[in-house]
Image 1 (cartoon, rainbow over the protein chains, first blue to last red):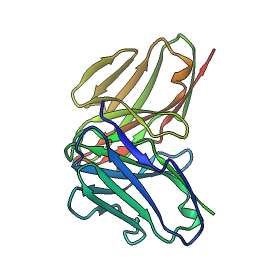
Image 2: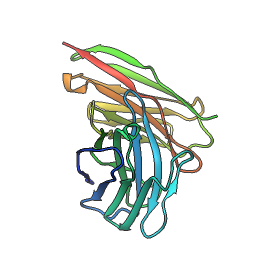
Image 3: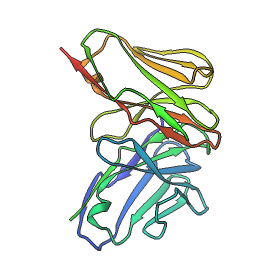
Image 4: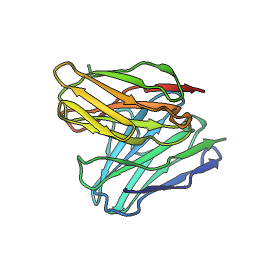
Length: 115
Length: 109
């Protein structure tokens, strides 16, 4: 099946620093990638949708200047959390689709802890 | 508003059968997904239903009734590794996934 990887799997950073999370589709070309955030005991919250070569579409309430998304190729999307704060600590999950409305394949997630 | 309802938690016995229900009210419908999620891991896709009826895939089956806004996930021959949260998600008319809060399934020996 289609495989999506994320790197790093876990990251701890200091408040005020920036962290970049990579999402890669390993065996297919992902026209669309999604970034989710999950808080404990809650369902996934979609943060943004990115299509290769174009600007990401952010969900309401998600600060685009804080969560920078770059989908520069058909196999890679990055999420950069800028000036991270403890409240940004969460589990960030990406997913990828071959075509915009196709089934999504989820990455394993990245646990971010901001101290 | 859009809403997905599923039970918060269910308990079942190893080797038995369990049915997890999901009801939804969404603006349009472009399919319903079931995902399995183990603690600390990303959800894993289980099934996708867009037409009424039952879809069987090994020990797991998923049923959909669009007129009733209802789906269920049926798990047979339960194994301890099936202990997880099961997420129901509906793709609405804008092709966005509306997620339920998940059902935590506890399997007892």
